[in-house]
Length: 304
Image 1 (cartoon, rainbow, N blue to C red):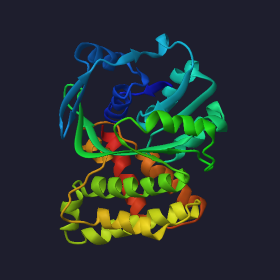
Image 2 (cartoon, helix red, strand yellow):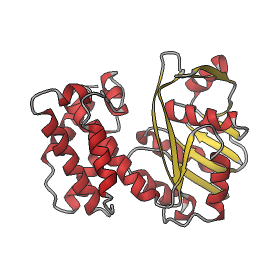
Image 3 (cartoon, rainbow, N blue to C red):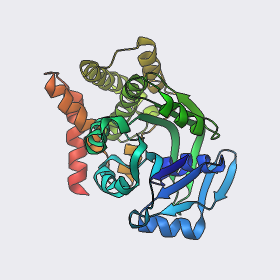
Image 4 (cartoon, one colour):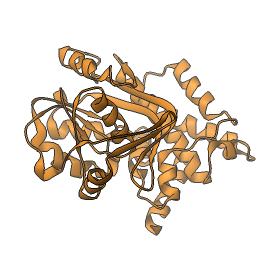
């Protein structure tokens, strides 16, 4: 299977590397700076098990040739518009596009651009970041990759994707209910990002502060009410596990949005929090805590 990995940051770099190491034909679509960095130093993975370096197959938008069987989009959500243009030459009649982005807005955007039949569901769970020299740092052994048809019909096309991905040295989950997985990932991610960015700290610091547990549970409840109104078929055991994970004071957690914010980078405020507020307004839901978070993030972006 010919695979194009749009992006070679922490997510794209890690999972793309594992696919390449498993013998898949993987090309990384990257910008000039990342292209030069990877050409010079290779793609470096620093994992809990050691350091690995591989020489990746690279391309830039102006050098893409031929169609790909699978395009995995791993850029930040605010870079999606440019990626739509960049990957267009690589999209053929049989191409499937699997976005691994935060939130859900990107799915409709990709479907409108390339057609509903071309977009499949995907998400990952990994604690990873880029180091100062562009190395991919996997901070914990967690490395899960979920995928499946958005309508649950995992036909022969999806079976072929599964055959390519399931032997790539990561924990793969071929889901027949990927939409619920996506809603639940958004619930986890947005709650974590909201409380960490608002309180400017990790969950351990928040939960051991006066009112911290109430803040986390309040944000969680608001977000759950929004996604339920939007069509999430609540799975009580799953949502309970998410809240239990977030509420453990022994395990300090932060979100990628919070880490980006503390480093002064652009953040996915509109995609992770803003879109929830738009959906809440559609259903006349009161979300005062999410509104406070959104104002906080908007002020940060104005001050960058």
